[in-house]
Structures are given as C-alpha cells and as structure tokens.
Amino acid sequence: MSTDLDPPRSASSSLYIGLMSGTSLDGVDGVLASLPADADGQPMATLATAYVPFPDDLRAALMALQANGENELQREAMAANQLAVYYAQCIAELLEKSAIPAAYIRAVGVHGQTIRHRPELGYTRQTNNPSLLAELCGIDVIADFRSRDVAAGGQGAPLVPAFHQAVFGSEEQARVAVNIGGISNISILPAGKLEATSGFDTGPGNVLMDAWIARHQGQTYDADGAWGASGKPDAALLAALRSDAYFALPPPKSTGRDLFHIEWLDAQLASHKELTPADVQATLTAFTATTIADAILKHAAQTGAVYVCGGGAYNAYLLKLLGEALSAGAERAIPVLSTEVLGIAPNHVEALAFAWLAQRFCLRLPGNLPAVTGARGLRVLGGLYPAQ
Ligand SMILES: Nc1ncnc2c1ncn2[C@@H]1O[C@H](COP(=O)(O)OP(=O)(O)OP(=O)(O)O)[C@@H](O)[C@H]1O
Ligand SMILES: CC(=O)N[C@H]1[C@@H]2OC[C@@H](O2)[C@@H](O)[C@@H]1O[C@H](C)C(=O)O
Image (cartoon, rainbow, N blue to C red; front, side, top):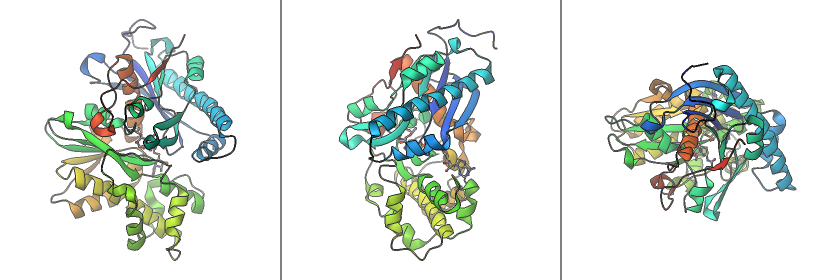
C-alpha cells in the first residue's frame, strides 16, 4: 500500500471508485483511481481495474426489465439487490488488487442499470440498490446521476462529454470522442474552447449486433467483428435502418433499448428476408459505423481526430467501416484511434467517468453540460448513501 494516503475516512482523500454497467448488460466495469481535486480532475491515475461479468440469470432478468411485464416492481427490486452483490464484488476486487483498504476510498460512483430511459416523459430509471451497496462495501456510495438533469429539463444523457472534455480535450487539436457501448454517443471537443463541448447519442452501438449474433450463433458478441466481416452490407437494408426518425432529430437527444431493440430490427427485416444472417450482421455493423460517421460529419467535420472507446473499440471490422464512412464524407482524412493512445483503455473510460462524477458530487461541482443534455443549467448530479 502506498504510504502517502490521506488518513482513513478523510474528506480530502482523492481516491474514488467508479462502476459502470451499461446497456450491453454484459457485466460491471470498475476502476479505482486517484483524482486530485485541485486540477479539476487532472491529472488522474488509475490504480486498479476490474470486470465482473453478470451471470446468465441476472442478464436475463435485466433484459426482461427493458420492457413492460408482469410483477415488474418486484422483479426490478430483486434485480437491484442482485446487482448490488456484483457491484460489491467488483469493489472488493479493486481493493484487493490495489491493496488499499475501503476506509481510504472517498466514495464509489455507481451508475446502476438503465432499464427505462424516457426523458421526454420526465424520467429515466437506473436500477440500483445503493443502500445495500453501502452496507456491503462500507464506502460512501454516490448513485442516481441522471435524474437531476432530467428534473432540470435535460435528457439525463449522455453525461460523459464533460469527462471526455476534461481528459481528452486539447488546446491545439479539435477532437471527437466516440463511446461505442450498447448505444453510441459522441463528444465534440473543439480545440482551445472546451467550454463549447457538445455531444449526443448517435444511435445503436453494439446492441443490435449483439442481439443478432446471440440469435444466430449463440454468442454474446461478434468478437473482433469477424462474423460481420464474413458477410456483405446490404445497401437497401442499410438505407431503411438509417431512415429511422431518430437520426434526423437535432441534439440534444439520447436513446436506448427503449427504441433500438430486436423487435425494431425484426420489423425492418420483414422486407429483407432474402439476406443471410452474416449479411445482416455486416449491415448492422455498417449501420453503427455510418450513423456515427454521419453525426461527426454533420456536427464536427473539422475534427482533427476521432478517439474511440467502449467495447466497440475492439471490433476491428466496425472501426474499418467507421474509417471508410468518415473518409467518404470528409474533405481530408480523419484518423480513427483508440483512446488508449491518450492513456485510457477503451473499456475503462466509462467507469473512470463515474469515479470522476462521484468526485464532482463530493466537491459539489456540476456534472452535466447543459449544451449536451438540454438541461436548464449546470447541476450537481447524484445522491449520497453514506457508509455509516
Ligand atoms: N473483442 C470484441 N470484439 C467485438 N466487440 C466487442 C469486443 N469486446 C467488447 N465488444 C462489444 O462491446 C460491448 C460492451 O461494451 P461496453 O462495455 O462499452 O458497453 P456498455 O457500457 O454496456 O454500454 P453503454 O456505453 O451503451 O452503456 C459488448 O457487448 C460487445 O458488443
Ligand atoms: C440512459 C443511459 O443509460 N444512457 C447511456 C447509454 O449508453 C451510451 C449512451 O446510452 C449514453 O447516453 C449513456 O451512457 C453514458 C455513460 C453517458 O451518459 O454518457
């Protein structure tokens, strides 16, 4: 253990844990990081990372909660309790790997599991039991990061642009950060005027590709995009997918499984029955790539580089199609790079963002960007569930 830690339970501790379980429903990503308070989140150091996959029953329970169903209040509460156990396991792994006792951690920022996202109706729901988590881990828990932004008239999402601004923004180069999780979102980071950061959800990331390969190959995701790459994108289906009204909406906008689910895909496929499953997977990969590229070309054509994070950064075929779609529409080449080259591995960015958001809460600093979410103003995000 490092000898220069603040005393246990110190309000000045710079050690935070961030936990993210996202729309892919695969598991929970965690980071334990040192976030010095005096530099607005920079520089920061990741001291440990962990990933705890969800068991099939929890995954299925969370999937079932994405739509209306019988006895859903109880099912939601039980899933939240089960989630807390996996979150606690992830925290225990982080503490063990870093050899830092729980008492030295200032707070845990935990996103919870989005099961409904309807900001237009005034709500977004991240299933969680932060009280149980505080009980299990003995650390202050900060949770429910989105609802205050929605209460202030915002989308409650995406929240990571403020963090992307802090860690990936540059004085010299205009950049775009793209998160390709279940859903994809972009952060537009203009050079030298980071206060002008914007961003929005571009549409599906991996969510439809995951659902399609699960149905046809029994896999949870298309490793490296190899199955998709074995097929050929179909122009007519791709055009039909891209014609959904979501893509023409101006920002602020956000989306989720509420809109982009397997039934939505099935409805689109009804008039393309001749395609092989591999061709559909290729088309879904092209769909994710082209809708991200369209968003960048429309809102950030002058960007110097695109940095990709989220699990989609490990899909080589998707990145190839994204690079092609960008170069087809841009006046000059836009390099597509992993956030790894900026010092943060793609699969750790979101968890680190929730450690950062927990710090923002502890310092009572705003976590949202009204220009992104459409909220009436800056707001401190989250609620506190004390360790004791
Ligand atoms: N090696 C890989 N090859 C292809 N795809 C991958 C690979 N590793 C991860 N993925 C994809 O990334 C997904 C998980 O990404 P991530 O953890 O960023 O999503 P999430 O955080 O659940 O979603 P969101 O950002 O929408 O909340 C997997 O479901 C899979 O589709
Ligand atoms: C409601 C919700 O959970 N939204 C997620 C989802 O996953 C990606 C995209 O859609 C983004 O809007 C958001 O997550 C990240 C962490 C965000 O808020 O920036």
